[in-house]
Length: 108
Image (cartoon, rainbow, N blue to C red; front, top):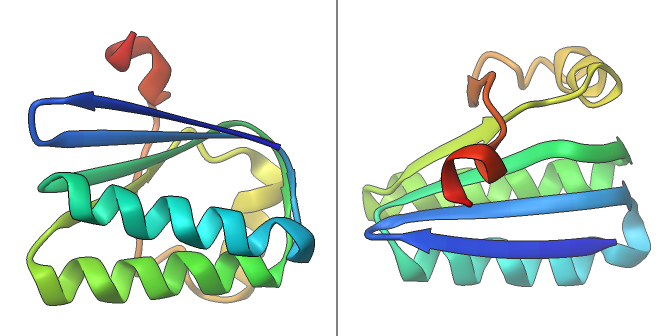
């Protein structure tokens, strides 16, 4: 697992890579919460993620709730099909703002 963070003004791009599972959940949670403290918009790029499990979904829901409380825009980007299927199964695809374009193209 790799986490890369880019900042452009108040926009934070959190680029995740690899298989994200329960063992990696604490590190993902920490990165999400740090990203929320650093700017007014956090976009989590999934273009390099191959799989996630429910622990990561829980991290995302927590981050979204924190973002809403703080008035921070929160979005997911470039969500691959296996991840989108899990979000749809959980009916969470309707609560997240989801963008098509990977962050690393606009953040590089």
